[in-house]
Image (tube, rainbow over all chains, first blue to last red; front, top):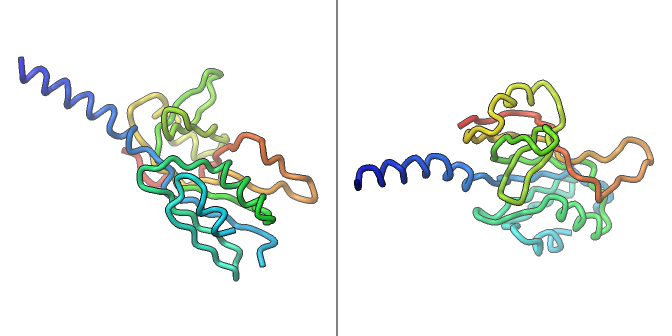
Length: 35
Length: 132
């Protein structure tokens, strides 16, 4: 029973962890009129 | 402008290069950052944004009208402009795979045409850095 639960947790982790880590990592802007 | 941007939510660090007019924004590790809000903040400080590039990690998804988008979080996604690089990631649509791409999110319209700051930002993929 515990093995089943662990396997389910592992599968859910594989699916959701990458989405949780999704993010904007860097933003670069070129601007005009800056003094 | 640096202070103005630094006050925006999700911003960790802002680097400004006066020589080449470049502004680098480093988002917080776990923070939510809104590029549209940054654009507005720059405009509000009296400076014109000519171009905005982002490096972003997310999932390729199809929106309700079947167009591809890059989903960054539950409530943040960017429509992707069609090009050859989009074709290379289109097969990952709605799969759990995550991609890291560098792309252009905004470019000032050519000529004297006024930029529509409120128009939705569209991501033009320039480089696919990683597929996981």
